[in-house]
Length: 106
View 1 (cartoon, rainbow, N blue to C red):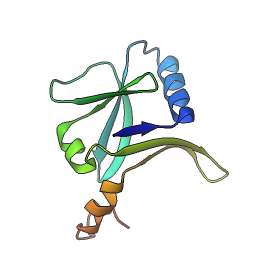
View 2: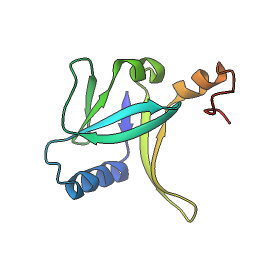
View 3: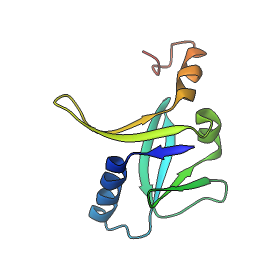
């Protein structure tokens, strides 16, 4: 299940508006063992889709297998960092089986 905080949903919609995207999807994917977000206008036939807080969310099959469909998206603002956070309990177990030489768990 994908969860999006109210603040994150607001910021996603603002980013889409700034990019002039009226009909968009939020894609969640894994790159170098780190969860990432992107805005896209097209859906692939193999994507799993959810809709939360008015946002259509896509996850490809491989990413969904890694995340097990459990993702929390939030927005944080602090003196150190400002931006989206993407967390999944499945990543912790995924990284625990990692040999440690790929840079994802350090």
